[in-house]
Image 1 (spheres, rainbow, N blue to C red):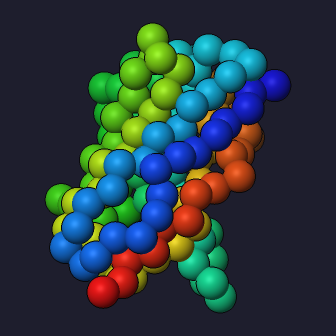
Image 2 (image 1 turned 120 degrees about the vertical axis):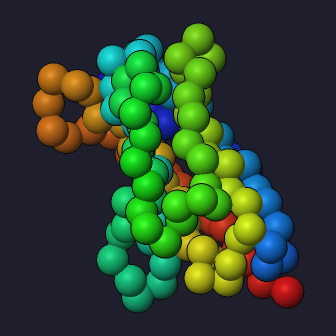
Length: 118
């Protein structure tokens, strides 16, 4: 059982930056694909960024390419999402998801609220 705790959310101005962190416990995440999702009110949950277990491959939603960067520190059992050039449409609850490489379903954190507004 993996527990995930997100942090780093808050209020940012358009054009600003935030760095989210997802700290895992209960297991080492070195064999997990790590994902960041987001969900805005009235919208479906959206995959924002993903990173392979070794961190060698990353993928991003078209809406965040060039602005967001996912990274991981397996020694710290933590994954990060650096968000730059934030836009109001980035406002959502951001959720961390950990999927072990040997199966298709994984674990979720509780989420952290990101609000982009002037």
